Length: 349
Image (cartoon, rainbow, N blue to C red; front, side, top):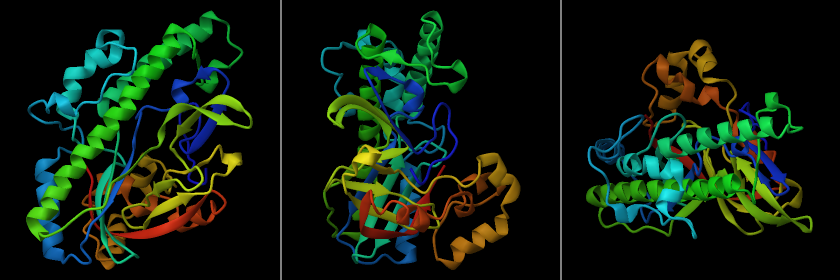
């Protein structure tokens, strides 16, 4: 994909189809990470109300490594995959109680909450988050298991490639797919709960306000799909499904637009598109090379209430990311833009 950058095993921003096997490193560590977007009935928001809303969001949604002091209502957790009991999912069962305190939390890295103004004339809300520590634990467990099994099987896949695989019809493969599916559903439940909190904050500040139905997509997962006349396991690691007519979300950096897109169903990409702008430089490189004052000034000139406060925040500065305009223009054969969303206020860890 045009936003691709370095990742373990395969690029973040990569798509791979495999015959009858699943590759944990081709899904990644933040299983189910994805986007949620909602259009509001508001056509404007002044700066004071924006600040009030974002302060409420920061007070109600734990950021970074923080979690809720008490477990969330268990009814908000996703259903177990069909045919599996909790005890048959070793990582999920071990992390289940911890996950209840992480439900409705943002996490760190490139995860964000953003209030945006659309070129359709409406104010939008967008959330980018994943499966928190649960997905990380599942990914690590099964990648190590796959590496051990591949070594035992004398697999032809070079261990240095970090693409150890599990047969889908094996006990290990079936269990990974089930735990991965739970993480995807958990990440969706996580975004949904945060979106409800943000919508409540808008209602408290801007009533009356109504909301469109939510657009929800994941960009780290594997799924059985039909391509080129055969059944394959499509891995999307930092990539979004873009079937013909399917609505998707491609976010930019906190200093650049995001896009609501419609898929064109291009078979050469396995009906996929990018998941964002993609990194132009690594996190350590960004903190070392970018100028804090200049990055802040860029966002201040645009009037964005942003999250760049110190040098440690520079890994998420706009300058650390590719030009989202070029990324979008590079995939005109994959998606068409429906709505352009410009950032007004951003929350990051």
